[in-house]
Image 1: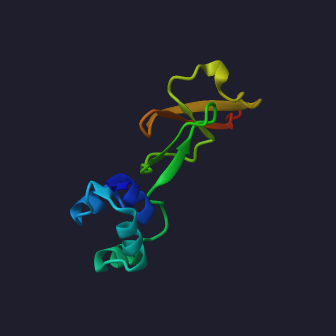
Image 2: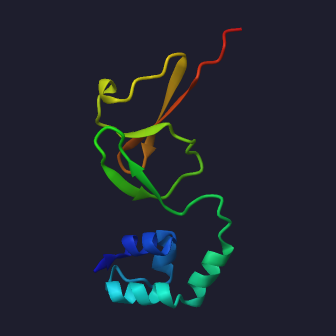
Image 3: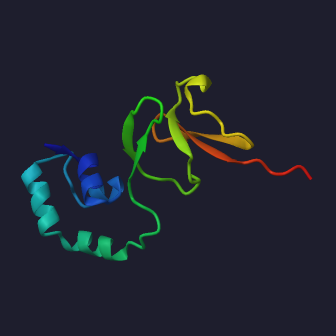
Length: 124
């Protein structure tokens, strides 16, 4: 059995679209395989409309402990240097490269902080 969320990830569609088109809360694996092999019209159209600029789902993985989850990327997410669970201590995170500044973005996925390490601006 596959959950609706898992089916949405496999079909590469938003969860809202899965709900709107009647994908049940739990779906038989064979039924999901049939849907992939012979997609309904709405799924064919959805795939044709994809611009490819942003993925529908991304895998988030903690650099420290390896915890992973699938999430819908947000427009405000920059290109993260790494992602870590919110409950890790600063000393557990990868070392900040010399001459770089670190910016943290809380609220990534259900439990992560996204981190961007960038070269420091020259004083000037």
